[in-house]
Every structure is written in structure tokens, then in C-alpha cells.
Image 1 (tube, one colour):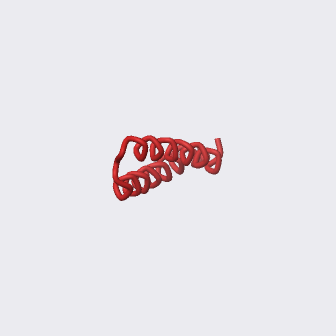
Image 2 (image 1 turned 90 degrees about the vertical axis):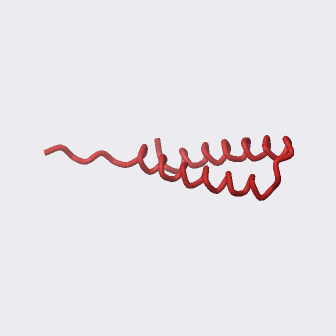
Length: 57
């Protein structure tokens, strides 16, 4: 799976979670902080999962 495809899926996930939190009445500042944290975690996991394998010798 490519990194771009992984990030698109994760952004859709973050959008859904943020929408649910705003609908539940959570203050926007907390939603923004949570979305930023999730974006960072998504980038870390995306790089780890889509990284090319080291060639074996």
C-alpha cells in the first residue's frame, strides 16, 4: 500500500472522528489538538508500514 493512499484513509478517519466530537459538543480547541495528534500518529504509522524492505544479502 502506498503512503499517499494510507494518508488519505487516515485523513478520512480523522475527519469522521472530528465531526463526531464536534457533534457531541466537544470544544473546537480540543478537537483541533486531538486531530493534530492523530495526524502525527498517522504519519508515523504510515511511514513504518509503507517503508521499503531492506534487501537481504
